[in-house]
Amino acid sequence: MAWEGSTRRARLPKDWPRTRRRILRRDGYECQTRFSDGRLCGLPANQVDHIEPGNDHRDANLQALCTWCHTHKSSSEGGTAAAHTRVRTHKPAPIHPALED
Ligand SMILES: [Zn+2]
Figure 1 (cartoon, rainbow, N blue to C red):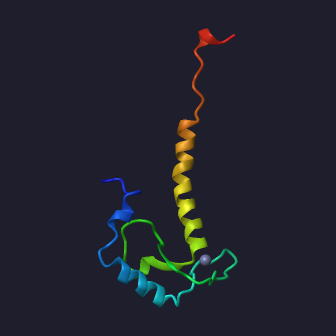
Figure 2: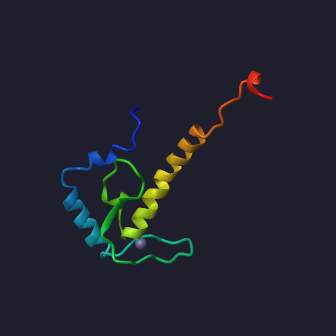
Figure 3: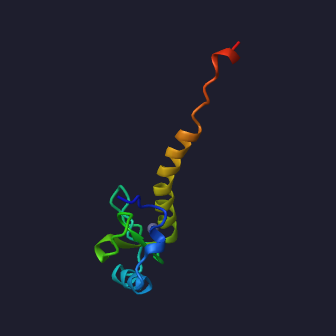
């Protein structure tokens, strides 16, 4: 089972520009982000996002987003991985008992 993550952008389908235009048209060029209070963002959309990150490029997994929402969503997806890395790398190095006062 190959680990799928940072390389997914390189695997966008060949007809992605056409798919992207179709999704933007379908969603009326309006950002589809649904806030927790039920409101739709509705700002002019110029990005197409994968609702579930991965290689599912079907229309049902794609939505139009504004730049702000797309950046925010992508950074929180990446942020999870970064947080895991931070936990690993910032583990304090054990001090050898002989070096302790
Ligand atoms: Zn938005």
